[in-house]
Length: 290
Image (cartoon, rainbow, N blue to C red; front, side):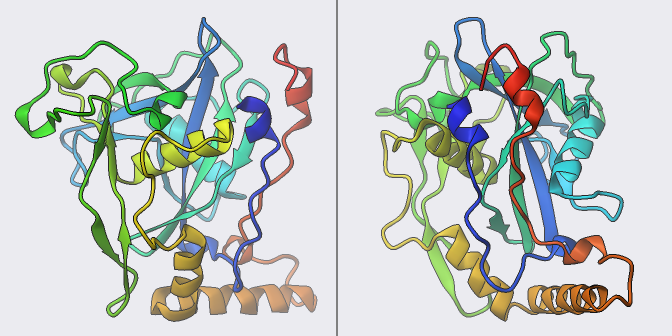
Protein backbone atom coordinates (compact mmCIF):
# COMPACT_ATOMS: atom_id res chain seq x y z
CA UNK A 1 0.00 0.00 0.00
CA UNK A 2 2.81 2.42 0.90
CA UNK A 3 4.69 1.64 -2.29
CA UNK A 4 1.57 2.23 -4.35
CA UNK A 5 0.80 5.54 -2.65
CA UNK A 6 4.43 6.71 -2.90
CA UNK A 7 4.37 6.03 -6.64
CA UNK A 8 0.89 7.39 -7.29
CA UNK A 9 0.62 10.15 -9.87
CA UNK A 10 -2.35 12.48 -9.79
CA UNK A 11 -4.28 12.31 -13.08
CA UNK A 12 -3.94 15.39 -15.27
CA UNK A 13 -6.33 18.09 -14.05
CA UNK A 14 -9.15 19.16 -16.36
CA UNK A 15 -8.82 22.38 -18.34
CA UNK A 16 -8.96 25.09 -17.05
CA UNK A 17 -6.48 24.84 -14.18
CA UNK A 18 -7.55 24.40 -10.58
CA UNK A 19 -7.39 27.82 -8.86
CA UNK A 20 -5.77 27.62 -5.44
CA UNK A 21 -7.87 30.60 -4.36
CA UNK A 22 -10.84 28.18 -4.25
CA UNK A 23 -8.87 25.27 -2.80
CA UNK A 24 -8.44 23.56 0.55
CA UNK A 25 -6.45 20.54 1.70
CA UNK A 26 -6.67 17.81 4.33
CA UNK A 27 -3.81 15.72 5.72
CA UNK A 28 -4.17 11.93 5.56
CA UNK A 29 -1.48 11.03 8.09
CA UNK A 30 -0.58 7.32 8.05
CA UNK A 31 1.67 5.31 10.33
CA UNK A 32 2.68 1.65 10.60
CA UNK A 33 1.34 -0.20 13.65
CA UNK A 34 3.10 -2.90 15.63
CA UNK A 35 1.65 -5.68 13.48
CA UNK A 36 2.56 -3.96 10.23
CA UNK A 37 -0.93 -2.60 9.50
CA UNK A 38 -1.41 0.96 8.32
CA UNK A 39 -3.39 3.35 10.50
CA UNK A 40 -4.73 6.83 9.81
CA UNK A 41 -5.01 9.64 12.36
CA UNK A 42 -8.53 10.93 12.92
CA UNK A 43 -9.68 13.76 15.14
CA UNK A 44 -12.92 14.61 16.88
CA UNK A 45 -13.94 18.20 16.31
CA UNK A 46 -14.72 20.26 19.39
CA UNK A 47 -18.41 20.49 20.35
CA UNK A 48 -18.11 24.28 20.53
CA UNK A 49 -17.32 24.71 16.82
CA UNK A 50 -20.06 26.28 14.71
CA UNK A 51 -19.55 23.90 11.76
CA UNK A 52 -19.81 20.12 12.17
CA UNK A 53 -19.35 20.08 15.97
CA UNK A 54 -18.21 16.72 17.33
CA UNK A 55 -17.69 15.18 13.89
CA UNK A 56 -14.88 12.75 13.14
CA UNK A 57 -12.57 14.40 10.63
CA UNK A 58 -9.13 14.85 9.10
CA UNK A 59 -7.05 17.95 9.87
CA UNK A 60 -7.29 20.53 7.12
CA UNK A 61 -8.52 23.88 5.90
CA UNK A 62 -8.40 26.50 3.15
CA UNK A 63 -5.33 27.50 1.19
CA UNK A 64 -3.81 30.75 2.52
CA UNK A 65 -1.55 33.23 0.67
CA UNK A 66 1.49 32.25 2.79
CA UNK A 67 1.23 28.61 1.68
CA UNK A 68 3.53 27.63 -1.19
CA UNK A 69 1.26 24.76 -2.23
CA UNK A 70 -1.48 22.50 -0.91
CA UNK A 71 1.01 20.31 0.93
CA UNK A 72 1.93 23.41 2.95
CA UNK A 73 -1.77 24.02 3.61
CA UNK A 74 -2.40 20.50 4.89
CA UNK A 75 0.74 20.43 7.04
CA UNK A 76 0.06 23.89 8.51
CA UNK A 77 -3.50 22.98 9.40
CA UNK A 78 -2.39 19.68 10.98
CA UNK A 79 0.22 21.55 13.03
CA UNK A 80 -2.36 24.11 14.17
CA UNK A 81 -5.04 21.53 15.01
CA UNK A 82 -3.15 18.56 16.44
CA UNK A 83 0.45 19.78 16.78
CA UNK A 84 1.77 17.39 14.12
CA UNK A 85 5.33 18.51 13.21
CA UNK A 86 5.84 19.98 9.73
CA UNK A 87 9.16 18.16 9.36
CA UNK A 88 9.26 16.61 5.88
CA UNK A 89 11.94 14.08 6.88
CA UNK A 90 10.13 12.73 9.92
CA UNK A 91 6.79 12.88 8.09
CA UNK A 92 7.49 12.63 4.34
CA UNK A 93 4.98 13.15 1.56
CA UNK A 94 3.58 10.09 -0.19
CA UNK A 95 1.22 11.67 -2.73
CA UNK A 96 -1.61 14.00 -3.52
CA UNK A 97 -4.99 12.40 -4.32
CA UNK A 98 -7.78 13.69 -6.54
CA UNK A 99 -9.57 16.83 -5.31
CA UNK A 100 -13.13 16.58 -4.04
CA UNK A 101 -15.74 19.21 -4.90
CA UNK A 102 -17.78 20.27 -1.86
CA UNK A 103 -20.93 22.32 -1.51
CA UNK A 104 -19.18 25.49 -0.37
CA UNK A 105 -17.59 25.70 -3.85
CA UNK A 106 -14.16 24.56 -2.74
CA UNK A 107 -11.84 21.90 -4.12
CA UNK A 108 -10.50 19.81 -1.23
CA UNK A 109 -7.28 17.90 -1.98
CA UNK A 110 -6.12 15.01 0.25
CA UNK A 111 -2.37 15.13 0.96
CA UNK A 112 -1.10 11.71 2.09
CA UNK A 113 1.94 11.55 4.39
CA UNK A 114 3.69 8.85 6.40
CA UNK A 115 4.71 9.36 10.03
CA UNK A 116 8.12 7.70 10.34
CA UNK A 117 9.17 9.01 13.75
CA UNK A 118 7.61 6.91 16.56
CA UNK A 119 8.44 9.68 19.03
CA UNK A 120 5.96 12.12 17.48
CA UNK A 121 3.50 13.22 20.15
CA UNK A 122 0.65 15.37 18.82
CA UNK A 123 -0.63 18.28 20.90
CA UNK A 124 -4.33 19.06 20.54
CA UNK A 125 -5.65 22.57 19.98
CA UNK A 126 -8.57 22.08 22.38
CA UNK A 127 -10.80 24.90 21.02
CA UNK A 128 -10.80 23.00 17.70
CA UNK A 129 -10.08 19.34 18.51
CA UNK A 130 -11.34 17.38 21.52
CA UNK A 131 -9.75 13.97 20.81
CA UNK A 132 -7.34 12.17 18.51
CA UNK A 133 -7.36 8.47 17.63
CA UNK A 134 -6.29 6.08 14.87
CA UNK A 135 -8.14 3.61 12.66
CA UNK A 136 -6.91 0.90 10.25
CA UNK A 137 -6.85 2.19 6.69
CA UNK A 138 -7.91 -1.17 5.23
CA UNK A 139 -11.09 -1.06 7.38
CA UNK A 140 -12.57 1.43 4.91
CA UNK A 141 -12.76 -1.42 2.39
CA UNK A 142 -14.48 -3.88 4.73
CA UNK A 143 -18.10 -4.59 5.48
CA UNK A 144 -17.31 -6.08 8.91
CA UNK A 145 -15.99 -4.00 11.79
CA UNK A 146 -12.26 -4.45 12.55
CA UNK A 147 -12.93 -4.45 16.31
CA UNK A 148 -15.43 -6.10 18.61
CA UNK A 149 -18.98 -4.81 18.39
CA UNK A 150 -19.97 -2.06 20.77
CA UNK A 151 -23.41 -0.98 21.86
CA UNK A 152 -24.49 1.66 19.35
CA UNK A 153 -27.08 4.40 19.69
CA UNK A 154 -30.34 3.36 18.04
CA UNK A 155 -29.83 5.93 15.25
CA UNK A 156 -26.52 4.25 14.28
CA UNK A 157 -27.59 0.62 14.68
CA UNK A 158 -27.66 -1.49 11.55
CA UNK A 159 -28.75 -5.14 11.71
CA UNK A 160 -26.77 -6.39 8.72
CA UNK A 161 -23.43 -4.61 8.53
CA UNK A 162 -21.72 -3.60 11.77
CA UNK A 163 -18.90 -1.62 10.17
CA UNK A 164 -20.22 -0.16 6.94
CA UNK A 165 -23.39 1.92 6.95
CA UNK A 166 -24.64 2.89 3.49
CA UNK A 167 -26.91 5.88 3.42
CA UNK A 168 -29.62 6.19 0.85
CA UNK A 169 -28.48 7.66 -2.43
CA UNK A 170 -28.29 11.40 -2.09
CA UNK A 171 -28.71 13.99 -4.82
CA UNK A 172 -25.82 16.46 -4.65
CA UNK A 173 -26.27 19.75 -6.56
CA UNK A 174 -23.43 20.88 -8.82
CA UNK A 175 -25.11 24.21 -9.51
CA UNK A 176 -28.66 25.57 -9.42
CA UNK A 177 -29.73 23.38 -12.35
CA UNK A 178 -27.64 20.20 -12.44
CA UNK A 179 -27.27 17.53 -9.79
CA UNK A 180 -25.72 14.10 -9.45
CA UNK A 181 -26.71 11.10 -7.35
CA UNK A 182 -23.92 10.17 -4.94
CA UNK A 183 -23.67 7.18 -2.62
CA UNK A 184 -22.80 8.40 0.87
CA UNK A 185 -21.12 6.17 3.45
CA UNK A 186 -20.59 5.86 7.19
CA UNK A 187 -17.91 3.75 8.87
CA UNK A 188 -17.98 2.71 12.51
CA UNK A 189 -14.79 2.95 14.55
CA UNK A 190 -15.74 0.93 17.63
CA UNK A 191 -15.74 4.09 19.73
CA UNK A 192 -19.38 5.02 19.29
CA UNK A 193 -20.26 4.11 22.90
CA UNK A 194 -17.70 6.75 23.96
CA UNK A 195 -19.52 9.42 21.99
CA UNK A 196 -17.29 9.33 18.91
CA UNK A 197 -19.31 9.79 15.74
CA UNK A 198 -18.85 7.42 12.77
CA UNK A 199 -16.64 8.49 9.88
CA UNK A 200 -19.00 10.01 7.36
CA UNK A 201 -19.40 12.62 4.61
CA UNK A 202 -16.29 14.02 2.94
CA UNK A 203 -13.94 12.29 5.41
CA UNK A 204 -15.47 8.89 4.61
CA UNK A 205 -15.23 9.54 0.86
CA UNK A 206 -11.57 10.59 1.11
CA UNK A 207 -10.52 7.61 3.23
CA UNK A 208 -12.45 5.16 1.05
CA UNK A 209 -10.66 6.57 -2.00
CA UNK A 210 -7.28 6.48 -0.22
CA UNK A 211 -7.74 2.82 0.69
CA UNK A 212 -8.89 1.91 -2.84
CA UNK A 213 -5.85 3.63 -4.39
CA UNK A 214 -3.36 2.26 -1.85
CA UNK A 215 -4.53 -1.33 -1.70
CA UNK A 216 -5.59 -1.38 -5.38
CA UNK A 217 -8.82 -3.21 -4.69
CA UNK A 218 -12.54 -2.56 -4.61
CA UNK A 219 -14.39 -2.44 -1.27
CA UNK A 220 -16.77 -5.17 -0.11
CA UNK A 221 -19.71 -2.92 -0.98
CA UNK A 222 -20.77 -0.66 -3.83
CA UNK A 223 -18.70 2.53 -3.54
CA UNK A 224 -20.67 4.61 -6.06
CA UNK A 225 -24.25 5.21 -7.11
CA UNK A 226 -25.40 3.98 -10.55
CA UNK A 227 -24.28 6.58 -13.08
CA UNK A 228 -22.51 8.66 -10.43
CA UNK A 229 -20.30 11.33 -11.98
CA UNK A 230 -16.61 11.10 -11.19
CA UNK A 231 -15.05 13.87 -9.12
CA UNK A 232 -13.00 14.88 -12.14
CA UNK A 233 -16.14 15.30 -14.28
CA UNK A 234 -17.94 17.23 -11.54
CA UNK A 235 -14.96 19.54 -11.07
CA UNK A 236 -14.50 20.10 -14.80
CA UNK A 237 -18.15 21.10 -15.10
CA UNK A 238 -18.00 23.36 -12.02
CA UNK A 239 -14.86 25.14 -13.26
CA UNK A 240 -16.55 25.91 -16.58
CA UNK A 241 -19.95 26.99 -15.30
CA UNK A 242 -20.10 28.12 -11.64
CA UNK A 243 -19.34 31.87 -11.40
CA UNK A 244 -17.06 31.75 -8.34
CA UNK A 245 -14.92 29.17 -10.11
CA UNK A 246 -14.95 30.76 -13.56
CA UNK A 247 -13.91 34.11 -12.05
CA UNK A 248 -11.13 32.50 -10.01
CA UNK A 249 -9.88 30.58 -13.04
CA UNK A 250 -9.94 33.74 -15.15
CA UNK A 251 -7.89 35.66 -12.59
CA UNK A 252 -5.42 32.81 -12.23
CA UNK A 253 -4.92 32.55 -15.99
CA UNK A 254 -4.49 36.31 -16.36
CA UNK A 255 -1.85 36.39 -13.63
CA UNK A 256 -0.10 33.39 -15.12
CA UNK A 257 -0.06 34.99 -18.60
CA UNK A 258 1.32 38.27 -17.23
CA UNK A 259 4.01 36.42 -15.30
CA UNK A 260 5.02 34.47 -18.40
CA UNK A 261 5.44 37.72 -20.32
CA UNK A 262 7.83 38.90 -17.66
CA UNK A 263 5.69 41.66 -16.16
CA UNK A 264 5.75 39.97 -12.76
CA UNK A 265 8.63 38.08 -11.15
CA UNK A 266 6.34 35.10 -10.50
CA UNK A 267 2.61 34.29 -10.45
CA UNK A 268 0.64 34.62 -7.25
CA UNK A 269 -0.18 31.34 -5.46
CA UNK A 270 -3.74 31.41 -6.83
CA UNK A 271 -2.46 30.78 -10.36
CA UNK A 272 -0.60 27.58 -9.60
CA UNK A 273 -2.32 24.36 -10.69
CA UNK A 274 -2.57 21.44 -8.34
CA UNK A 275 0.22 19.00 -9.10
CA UNK A 276 1.49 15.76 -7.65
CA UNK A 277 5.18 16.16 -6.82
CA UNK A 278 7.52 13.19 -6.93
CA UNK A 279 7.92 11.39 -3.59
CA UNK A 280 10.74 12.98 -1.57
CA UNK A 281 14.14 11.36 -1.78
CA UNK A 282 14.16 10.89 1.98
CA UNK A 283 11.61 8.09 1.61
CA UNK A 284 14.12 5.81 -0.09
CA UNK A 285 16.48 6.09 2.89
CA UNK A 286 14.05 5.04 5.60
CA UNK A 287 13.98 1.64 7.23
CA UNK A 288 10.83 0.85 5.24
CA UNK A 289 12.76 0.97 1.93
CA UNK A 290 9.83 2.28 -0.07
